[in-house]
Image 1 (cartoon, rainbow, N blue to C red):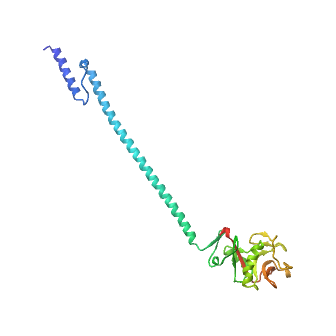
Image 2: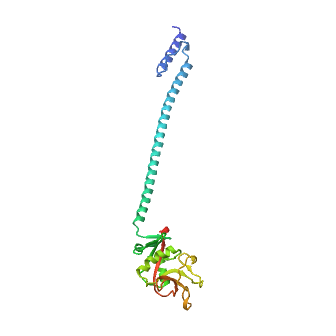
Image 3: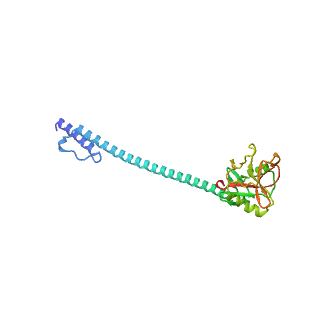
Length: 251
């Protein structure tokens, strides 16, 4: 056999062996004429396709893991929000429970403690009243009311006046009761110290009162008259019963 022909035959045999070792390369076209360069390019292309397929699989896996991670994060976030919400509801319910258990009546940030609160009487719409059995000077009576979350009573309408009289007049008409009225610093002009308002419009003064008898009567009270109780100015240091008032709107 001619040497040239033998060499070409050997090269062709090696090329076909290389092609057959590549998976899924396929059969060469008869027109390739055993082109070594074409064989190399085909082999390279096949390898690139294999790598690309593997990359596609990795990318798909990465996207799946990322999606699973995001779902997990959302679930955890939702669980945290649920726990926070439940905690807030629990706290709110606890506050409500504490308020319901409290035996104190509130007004302007102060407390009306027991047993004073249990003795409050709703004599007139919008207010409750504490009618004392104790006797004190006007100043001490005022301090007692304030320290228990109330004020000495301020009477601003005839209806309110009649409601209070209906209780104290029937209980013991011979007792006198301090109210919040005073003319300290404004001689002859009385103000309700419980509200800061001037006593005007409705009044219930006894005839010829207030008279500042002896120049030393500056505090207002329900005073026993011949037939009933009426308003009168009296000496503030004297001890009488008293009436405290608390506004129901701020209880």
